[in-house]
Image: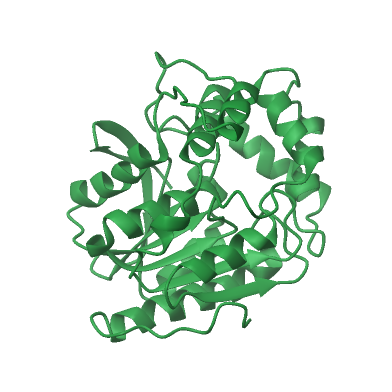
Length: 311
């Protein structure tokens, strides 16, 4: 499938579409340093078959979207220290900027309202969109993301160490080290074969390799901090999906997100880590599609989901 391009919020974004363009739009937003191909084709095609115009895109500074080549690269370790002590941080762009990218994408494609699905950092950005631009959304699904609440458990220390080393350029991202990292944060209950994991990494490398974007994405996440107050303002019908075995964004992050967003639904998966296991894609497709169709059936009325914690 060939990419299309659009100017959104002053940034050139690459995107792909699936399904009937006359159906309700569903935009898929990926996470930290991850290209649009991070959304499996099976999921995109499955959602299109359920009656949606599915759009997946590269965030700014990654993939085939515009790179912020003249922007500085903040040091993650320094930002983490400043965040801990509540000190101001100088970052090239923020998650708020990336939220405006999403709204700009909708504007450029002449989409008045859309369903939004965000994974990891994409879920964080989606939370901002839902809170600040809720009138543009029909529904929101947050996958393996967090509220940014400093009171809940963070990433496993060995995972943080690896991420900081990569951001500082102290660990060369070879095929072997990248596979080891994905094994560390992936789903222990659904481990991919070596061949499948290797293909995923090589496909991403061949499409585009731009570690500077990864570092600036990380800076934007650190600088954003807590979204606890923001989440309580969301009125968009929300579904939260999370794995019980996530080493990067522990399950408490998903639980807290669902707790804070009024009437949010929560679905937890045993054995799921910080990825989208092939074995769970049919379940994800059904959950997301049913959630979206449910919001369409009652777009203006009160939304009553499962109580957070029921799954």
